[in-house]
Image (cartoon, rainbow, N blue to C red; front, side, top):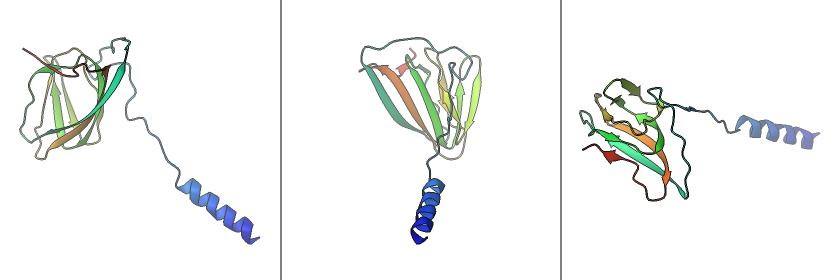
Length: 131
């Protein structure tokens, strides 16, 4: 009886500590509604960047030639294109724009920290500044 009770308590303890999984974003389009471009890679390379944008800081106009997605860990961030803007707060996620000029700015009072995941060809630039 004691062994059965111990096993039952252990099983309940393990199931109570089970991992969970939540999709933060799953999409075939970028945040502005454009379809992600199809592409194949000879040697895929994943890059994960932590980007910190200080309060009042405005990034330069740029583009990403590769598919990428991010999660805003802290702060506030507004992403602008010529036509649209997206306001983000901590915890928000997005599928970023591909081959579309845009910039981000922190209009909040604390640093905006975003973690961005890029999928590219090995050694390919993931960000290109507009000229």
